[in-house]
Image 1: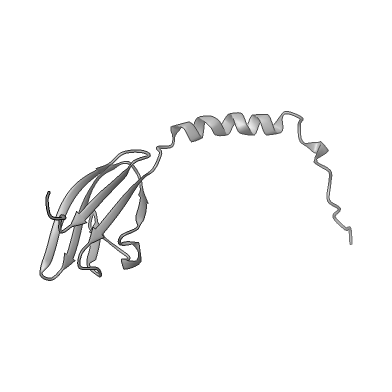
Image 2: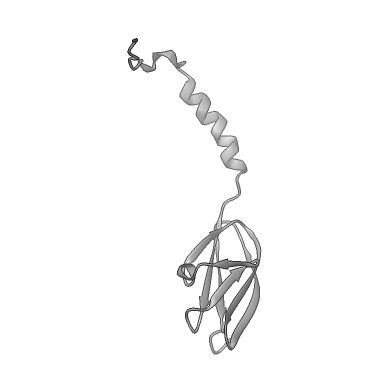
Length: 104
């Protein structure tokens, strides 16, 4: 039985790493930068959904990484029910709070 021995990296062209980096840069540049969405509810323990998808309770009151765009956030815990549309920009944080703090 032939034993396979590790081969040195000499089989790779000297410019291989440069070629990989050059190929990766344009792909990375085309990817949209993420934003974050923070959903706060009082009382705690409300059911939260973003664009109709329920968010795990552990993610409430924390930053959720999302793609830039507009989201419909629904927060429910009877008798509380609040729905808001929020826009998240690349590299920015948007916060949805329900109910709104006094003084707004």
